[in-house]
Image (cartoon, rainbow, N blue to C red):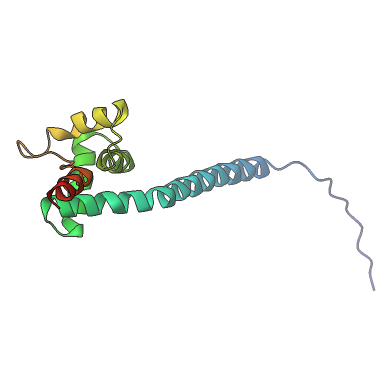
Length: 133
């Protein structure tokens, strides 16, 4: 049995390791941002659903067409869907502040003439029914 000479290799820092670490950190940051966006979407999902229902009822259209209308208003008015949904829900509940008024102004021109996004309040209808009885 012949013994082979023992060769010691000194570890030299690899230039690949910092690049891999940098790519990994970048990917982690990208995934964290995506997770934050998904959490935000889940939080606003119910509100967007209510807005779709309001549009469907207001214009007597299917929920699919109401969703398409909401997306089109968002794109044309350069306003996020969730912001339009928030404004619609607030407007429906009679809470129209400056931000809601600004959103309605931005998207109103993309609706056919004379059509309001938020119809008459239901409270008004209930109070008129009560006076008749």
